[in-house]
Length: 349
Image (tube, rainbow, N blue to C red; front, top):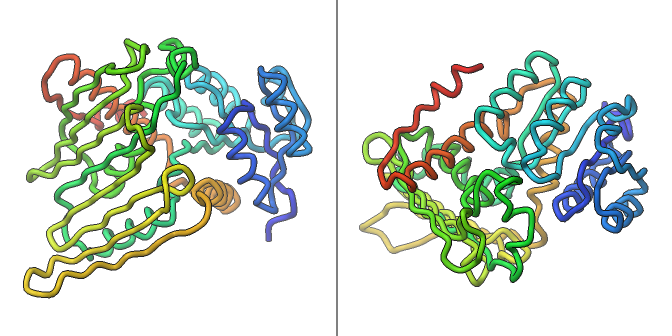
């Protein structure tokens, strides 16, 4: 049986994601936020007071604090590798925001460090933990829609005025624009639902916001064996926040819309291929707030407590999703379809 507040957590970062995830940590009776580090004094102070946690200006002091068992990384991506590697080497378990690192190669390096230190690390692919996604995955894996053939997804937001001044628009802090920021979630989901892909083509562009060389609009097409395809449209030129994930198989389909909050009601539609019968669908609405953050954190803790391996959001998932987006950027630049050789990446383990 777990002990109350068995796991003491140190959070590095005090922005939006840190606040979201702090609430999830506090909802788990076996975890407590011990210390938070941040560079913005106001956001740090507010979050620390909310969590009854200690404040820290230097993130390294969290890593070196022997009281802390788990490190949550909510910083810009260019800091992820340095923080995560040091945390693993100091026997901390790590949950890190996506993308796990600035490059797929560095994600593999973290995988190897984790194996060496026997500390666990997971990438924050919270979309796998939405209730509608969980149920859709069960439906697909049970063969209820047959063999997946085609996937289509739209994931976009209305970009903020002045976004060019944010760290997300600084090429020194990030390894891509909207495709790496949000589209990577969809790339991960399609690989999870449909298996691996063989090649990628893409077109990324900067249409509205002054953030070049980063893109505000991206279309990515994953190609698999026997004509299997998945299309991803990710942008900050979606003037109303939108999430739509569709997967069609030989015998039916699943569609997910909304994520709760500003993305509207989360809904799952399940349909069957029945050309001679009256058209019908099963529709499930998931009311309330976004539950993915809590579900993901509980999964993270369960794996640590049971000394298991992460089946979702592990370092290989993170490295391959990152690699898919990297190759998409290369395909867009060269205006060609490029092969996806994930084995060459994995062989570096």
